[in-house]
Image (cartoon, rainbow, N blue to C red; front, side):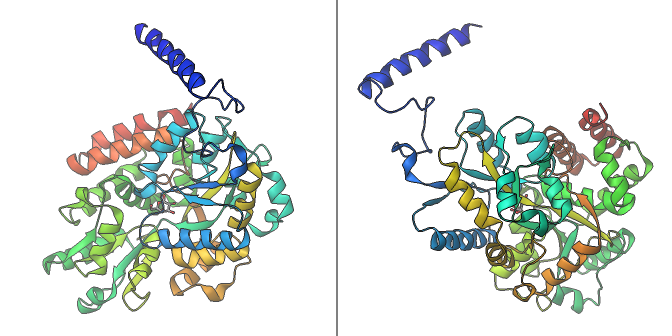
Length: 435
Ligand code: GAL
């Protein structure tokens, strides 16, 4: 291809030019471009660049708190907060992919346990095992085995989980519910009744902000979880149950009915804008992962008084798991300092500092329960008892390519609402799972 020739010629010219400017290349070969890496001062800077998408209310403050704690413990190591805004990594993941492909990994980055980490970065051979950190810090004993499995492959551990978020939750405005004599619905039929009552009083029943699609995918996966149960829901993402299953078709029908009750401007809103509608009493219910709990807290709302919660209808006894983890990419300049940072992330102190602000529960089982509010106290208990199911919308249940295609299918469905076409596109999106 002609383009290729131009590319190589340009690359060569650039190399010659750079070598000339640097006076004959006095520092060690750095493998090409190094912007955003070492500040050009070699590997002695000790900087840890922390890549995430935590910029919204709750999560941004949680992240800052953890960085502060690390700085106190390691005043000699600089931390750069390199967060890229966009819920669920809608922008960050693309930036990360570019950097990883270009050989410029951040020191450590937010990645969901499960397929996003294992079928993605680990399978691509981009991560170092961190078994030594697990041994030194006794992590095998303090993290639940289910979480360790979500960050392990072939006997190696590749990341440390900092939290557990629950995906199958709905939050509601307590005053709106009380004023209208409503209780949290426990089935989708009840949900539709509650929604109808609210609608008849001119209150938006369900707040949705699906500018980046995934919040709609979360609603759909919650309905799937309710209709299939944790075990069969899992089989969908392993390719053992097809998307033409009757329960999936029924879930799509329910999803369609639910969509009749969302705010009209949903496709212009981000998740936190939808959560805000509930905070303001302009909408009643928000189906969202419990980072919304962190968001409400950051807006000075009080759990139980201002907002209530319940598991999404019909999903009692199950727990849609989302875990944010951090690992050590191959090729970082200062792996020792990065490991210091990872050790802090996995520590009891840091988890008990971060999670009460973030809205999540600690990944560690020995956390100090007195630090957590009523929502998280309930959730910690539920996690230990419920059947766990990995979230698709947050990358744990299936490889990234599948997640992208399912999101596309959901996006089309939300606007066209044609069940048959949706089922067909879900089958296409997931065809690689049974191969
Ligand atoms: C999820 C992530 C959460 C939270 C949320 C909203 O993917 O696991 O920690 O950041 O996105 O951005």
